[in-house]
Every structure is written in C-alpha cells, then in structure tokens.
Amino acid sequence: MAKIGTYVQEAYDELIHKVSWPSWDELQQTTIIVLVALAITTLVVFGMDIASEKVLSTVYDLLGK
Image (cartoon, rainbow, N blue to C red; front, side, top):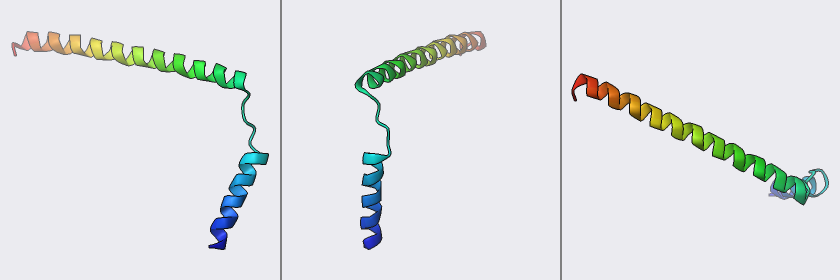
C-alpha cells in the first residue's frame, strides 16, 4: 500500500514541478491548429467517401445490378 502512496506523491510532484504547462495564448493557438487539421481531415475523408460512392455506382450500373 505504501508503494501506491509513493507513486501518487511522485506523480503529483512531477505534475506540479516538472511539467511545463502551455500559456493561455499557446493553448488557444494549438487548439485552432488541431481544429483546422480536423476539418481538413474530415473534408478529405468526405471526398473519398463521395468518390468511392460514384465509382461503385458506376461499376454497379455497368454490371446491371
């Protein structure tokens, strides 16, 4: 049980004294970057979905199904 207490104390100490937390401005900038990357990825996946739907529709029409 003492090992768990030591682990929690060391984890707390590391979070408070050793981790460098971003400033509010840095946090906002990186959040915007992540949201833009997410939007781009979403658009790429959406485009791939539409393209594959068109290709498969064409193939099914050609096969007469």
